Structure formats: structure tokens, C-alpha cells
Image 1 (cartoon, rainbow, N blue to C red):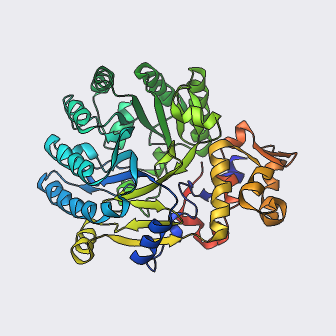
Image 2: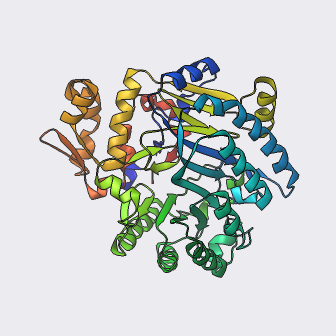
Length: 446
């Protein structure tokens, strides 16, 4: 079954996926989508592309440098973009902010406070909300957490990836284990309401046995949430990954074993398996909303802010507003040039048609909740489910035969094993994916 389902597929942080974005999408289309959006709440994503060191596994949009002045220049352009975009959202309330990268904590405390003040001066930021930032534990002092608290952050996400030293050396990411524990303790002292740990399985030299040891250390850390990502080895797309030898990587069977034992270990310790790569404590809002059928998914993964539009700021960032997606220039120099020329950095995007909107609802329901009531979808979207998705349901038959999916009383239910292959199941409802020539642009599911 592993061989049968180990093909390439999207992660469905959007539908249509970013592969459908094109540069015919204009600023005028974006402005129309903002005007027509029914939302009055906003999530902000701010991309900080800089990293001091290159992690060989990384596929993120990043700039490797030790020169802090580059961040000063970047913040100047980010400020220009904020000043240009913020008035378009003057009637919105910002209830979620996330800084990602790269490494947001590459910035100095002064730069972080400057940028944070700039955001608050230009947007209506709610007193109570989810304000999170990604932290690299290798390059900061404990006092950085005091700065983040002062800047208004109440959640942190710490990139650990693996506690095994041999694995760390192989991916050029050696770190001090004790410092990570000190960082978590300090975050709790300062009153951060949530801590997240990022791990990756499938890295060179990892085995189910070594990753089990990492999981035990993670349980000692006791984070509120965990993201456990599948390493996607795509050396043809990401040059740094060419430093990783194919023979050092785990087999698909070993990777699935790692995921399976991770789910068993974490759920046994009281965490809820949210899906794909996320786990949360049962009293966490992600768990609560999933249990209530109100979980959402966007470019930041699983999220609690369903009613929000998402505005991406900075190089390569993606916005999801109303019936459109819009992405900024992918590289720093074109990003600067576009802001100089136009005041904004729009690069490409897409407007959703009626079929896109229908399929987005179905895929989101499956990937967030692992079940779907056809009658509720019909009521919400004014369609006949079996007629509209006749071809898609035929594609689902192989999963039914393998007892990964069940359809009874017009309800689709994903089995516990099927949850591990939820990307494959969502593919059945993705009309764009059916263009077979494009499969190679996705990472393998296992």
C-alpha cells in the first residue's frame, strides 16, 4: 500500500494551489477582491527571509547572510509596503499576526521593536489575539524572549527538527539541547500562552529508533503544540539539498513508521492529532475548534482564524483575500524594485471561479475534519453532491476498497490509517492535479 500511494501531491494550504498562480493577476483584481470581501478581520503574515546559516534540508525562501545592515534595508521596504497596503484594510481588525522566515529572530531587538511598532501604527491590532513568531534557538540570547514579549508576541514556535547530534551535523544545524529547555522555561515564566516545537522526520541518518528518542525529549519539553513535518527531498529544486546523500535518507516504510510511532507517542501522552503534521493539547484552541467542526487551514497550516482574510507582507509572502490569492515577488531584489516602481510587490496570483470555491470547501472539510456530510455541503453550496462530484467519487473508490475511506448514509469518513494519506484523498477532488505532467512539482506524500 505504501508503494501504491507514494506519489507526489500538494499539502493543500490552499486550493487552487500556488502552481495555479500566474502573472496575469493584476493589482486591480486584488483591489476588487479586497473591496468585495465579506470579512472584517485580518491575519497578517510577515516574511523575514534572513538566516545566519544554511540548513541543508530547507526549502523556504531565504537569504543566507551575517550582514545585519541588509535587514535594515529590508525593513525600510517592508515599511513602504505596509504604508501602501494598510489603508486598504482600515475597516479590518487584526486578530492574528505571524512572523515567519527565514529566521525572524535574525533581526536585532531594536529592529523587532521598530517593525512591531510600525505594524501597530498602521493596522487596527486587537488587544487580544494570536501573535506568534518563529524562533531559531541557535542564534539568540534568552533575553530575546523579553524583547518578543515587549513587542506584543504571545506565542513562539521553536525550530528543533531533531535532537540527535549525527542528524544535526548532516543537515548543518547543530544546537545546544539545554538552551532549548532553558528557552521553553523562560517562555513560560514570561507568560507566553502557547509554545510550538517544529520537528522533521525523514532527515539523513534518522531511524524510527533515533526519532523515538527525540520524541521523548520533546515530551520532556511539554510544548502546547507540535508540528512534525515530512522532509521533502527535492534536490533538483533546492540546491542546498544536494549536500544530503540519497543513501543516508530513510525509506518510505521507515518514514511511515516514524510518523505512526509519533502519532502513537503523542496521542498516548494526551495530545490530539490535528492532522497531517500538527498536534495540540486537548485544551488548545486548535483541538477545541476541530472537535467543534470549525477548524481552518491556510498558508500557515491549520489555524483557528476561519473568518479572517490573510494579508502577506514581505518577499514571497502570499495573501488570501475574499475570492483571490496574491503572491509577492519571490526574491529580494525584484521585491525592492517593484516597491520602488509601484509601491507594492505583487507578482502573481489567481481569482477563484465557482468550481474553485466549491472544491476549496470540500478539500478544507476533509483535511481539517476527516469527514464530510454531503447533505450539509449541498445546503451550503446549492449543488447535488453525487452529480457534481461523480468523477471524483469514482477516483475515491480505490481508497474505499483499501478501507481508507468509508461512504455510508451520504457521509464520507476517513479511517485512522486514511488520515495518514489525507493528501492523496484530497487529490481526488483536485481538477488541476489531473494534469499529470505537473505531478513532479509536488513533494512525495510519504
